[in-house]
Amino acid sequence: MSEFVKTRIANRTGIITLDRPKALNSLSLGMVRDLADVLEGWRDDAAVDAVVITSSSEKALCAGGDIRFFHEVGHATPMGGSALLEDFFTEEYALNHLIHYYPKPYVALMEGVVMGGGMGIAQGGPDCGIRIVTEGTKMAMPEVNIGLFPDVGGSHFLSHAPGQLGNYLGLTGLTIGAADALYVGLADLFVPQAQMAALKELIETTPGGGLRPAIVAFAGQFKGQAGDSTLEANRAGIDKHFGAGSVAAVMASLEQDDGAFFQKALGAMRQRSPLMMCVTHELLVRGAKLDVADCLRMERTLVRHNFEHGEVLEGVRALVIDKDNAPKWNPAGLQDVTPEMVEKFFTPVWPARAHPLRHL
Image (cartoon, rainbow, N blue to C red; front, side, top):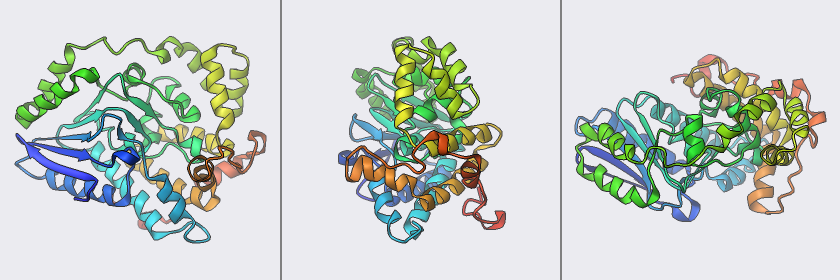
């Protein structure tokens, strides 16, 4: 493993610890490869009954992909076609697929920041995934803020969220906490931060074969302690506004609602990439009809088009490189986004037989 991914086996449970705290465990290509290697190895290892992914710091499980790396290698060629960039997204999405269908209990301790690519490595499949949040969890799919779209399987897990909650999260990119994560269905259990050390001790001392029921029983004593869900309280309005049918219609609907929650959503959307909000809206419509593998293949196509267009490179420049927080989106206004611009992002890049994720 690399210096940022630590692994060990304790009591028949494989434990993966992300240890890149200064970058909030942002995923590099090397980290993606390390995670894939260890998970593939443990998948067929009779000595491992369960897997836990955690962090060396309670500040973050994983803040996403390494966007500085995206910017650097995205400028490596005129069209942003760096082989390293291609490899990163192909291998990251294959890793997301591996995790979603992992055949053994896959426990994600979602402490602190869990965003973007961090969601991709935490959203285990419904059969074996156990996603644990604390009051310190800060969860988001904030890609539209940097001119990207909700990837790493976001087209699947956001499009399958109840009502219009997925559209709300994808189009605003706003952060939610534990209660909202549980309500949306992006987390399973709540454990107070003060009890996480005890949970980790339980993981260490419980045989892997009995880990799932032990964790569920442990978390059961804290049921209801995550607090009230803001999304639940505003659910009717979310479904009304974000079900309006297009990004322009959503924003027009929000403009008629003077509630603080909805004005915050509108303010966020006014800062996002108009083009990528429209692409995201279409992505979630299409993703609702696809399985996980096809969603990831669709996202892989969109990534290529996005870097060729340059929207994410400009978003990262404004947010992280120059830090002027003044991205020059292309096009600049929502009124200038055409259906043809959006459709272009879904145009196949490769024939099906040559798609880099054809084997999923």
